[in-house]
Length: 131
Image 1 (cartoon, rainbow, N blue to C red):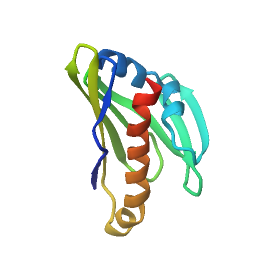
Image 2: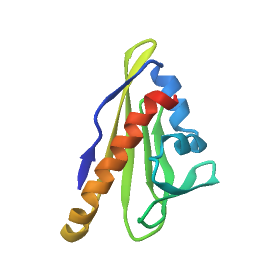
Image 3: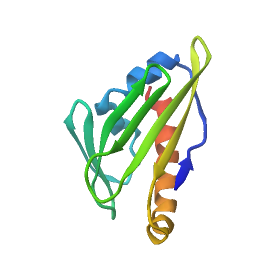
Image 4: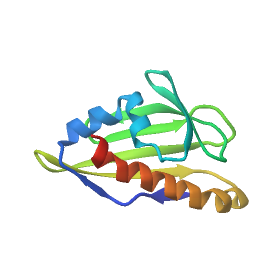
């Protein structure tokens, strides 16, 4: 299953956005209002839970400064990745799109598609306000 957030424009350079998104603690400011738990486990890993959903642990998997950050599931039953792609539109402006990719059985994919789509859209829409 592959999902993509809307592309958002930010009045910051690609490097500033990259630096913000590589600091795990900053993800707390991007989370939806229905986040019931957020905990930084170490400099590369955080745990979060949305109301009515199980806890999810995300870990930084790879980075290509200043254009790509890949977070992936760290343990648990679901294997997926969340990738932030950052494009420079000028020296002081950039655009970000989030891609979610996971391998789920058809029943699971049907159940989580709506909540995950809403989740990555919320993360993306909160980036310009937070950075």
